[in-house]
Image 1 (cartoon, one colour):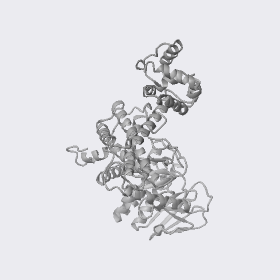
Image 2 (cartoon, rainbow, N blue to C red):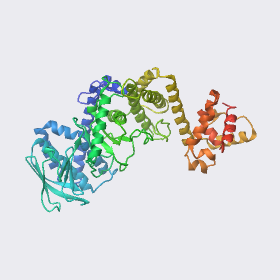
Image 3 (cartoon, rainbow, N blue to C red):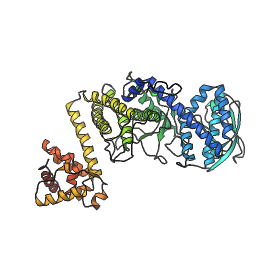
Image 4 (cartoon, one colour):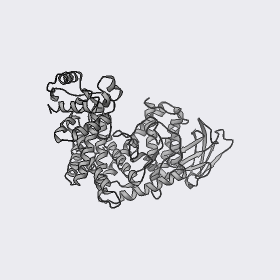
Length: 555
């Protein structure tokens, strides 16, 4: 936000912060975040170059590489800027800093660090300048970030090696890697051949469909994995469909994405090397793709194969929300998070820390807005859109309330959460068909009940009091006297004697409990603390009903 007397520092105007706090953000607000990321990236690059000079693990001098890049930036500043701000370079810089700090792993350090000279070659190519440098090869190939892949040796050559690169007039010659001769390519011409595989972009856009860059994953480098032509065509078609869907609204509210702000999509063909999915949700079991993002590369996202353009559009909205929040977190601490994984997240089956809840609240505010827009989209399924809108607004508002009441937000964090709350409260006042609203409430309740059965247990004292009273036919002890504790599910439930026939299957027991409670509004009190029923270990439908009837004496 604005701070008087802070000239020379990057400060965010309050109205832009409030736009982003609502879950949305105009082009001006997003452009400010890009400026934030540029400043941060320059700082990180400076730190990396200093460390490389202190620890000369590169195949050449880091100072020499930077001088060559700086000369290219003077000739074509816009090209150097695009390279610097590319997701490919951003991910490499932060990966290298983690390696230098000892918190990441990867190929031989000299090969990771030597990627600086591949960046150097791209800068010189873009500026029309010459160069003579040594570059690292992985499996006989050189990746030129944002441009493509040069295959130097025959297929099947593994490991890491070096090659001498000679750049003259846009022609790149690579030699000395045991290939038996020079390999000559012209990367800017774009024509593929047996030595040159150009980087893909989505047709008519600058957005990369990245299947080549080694730093496209969420953590450690991975090998290039070019998509088959048919698969590339599939992604191209779905991206076109997603872009059409996202272009329909013309305003800047939450859930609305300007497609040109997405810099890169990485097809997720398997589990990433070391990182999991986005910090707010698990791999979905339905038709939504698995997706993830990183704060190291604004506007970049990893997405598993979507079933259609609608699913891809939703994933793009979801992950771009993470990019916006990640940039805000580079400016402001929003939470004082002790890392304790104790909170309920409606989109996961496990407890989450407060930072994970914040990521989810921000992302799903965007998702809620996305489905709200689909309700007025004649090309979408109106019942599906209405159900998703009704469900996500309930779930996301609950998480915002949790963050405001049980977490420790900072001043900017409170301002952000109140912005999200105002958006969601407005949406909760919007009418939807009663039947759809009822299904959404039932789905939200079912998830919460199953989560409690999976993750919460009565403490030893409460379990003993319940068991004793139940056997004696006495009135149940009041729930207000005890607090549930975190506990495992499945095998642990069976091991501690609280399982019964349903305890080892939280989903099955949840269904049975919901059926028991659903018959009468008065029985819904059982669902506030379903772990109390679990503590009585009902082993059959009759035992379940008897235990439920007994607990209702207190409810």
